[in-house]
Length: 143
Image (cartoon, rainbow, N blue to C red; front, side, top):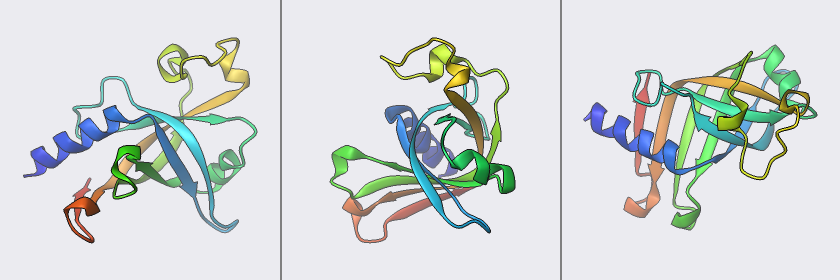
C-alpha cells in the first residue's frame, strides 16, 4: 500500500512544476509561488526530495534562515480545485544547483545565481488530497 502511494506521489510531483511555498515562525506566516523539480536521482528514493527556485528578493529566504520548516502546496489545475498535494518538510540551500535543469523555459540563464536561490526540501509528511473521491479524501505518507 505504501509503495502504491509513493508511486502516485512521485507521478504527481513529476506532472507538476509550480508550488506555493509557505513558511511560518516568530515573524509570521508567509507564502509565495515557486518553481520546483524533484531532486535529480532522488525521485524513487525513500526521501522524495524536491528543489525549489526562489527569487533573491523574496522574504522567504529571511524566514528560512530562522526556521527551515516549509509547507508546499501543489495544486492540480485540471481538477477544479479538488486535488492537491501537501508537502511538509525542511528546506536548506543548495550550493551548486543544476540551473539548466531547474530554470523554467524562457528564463534568462545569464548568471542565474545572481537572481535566484535554490533550496532543497526534505519531506517529513506528504498528503495527497483528492476530494473528487469524496470530501476529506486524503492519503498520508509519513517519512
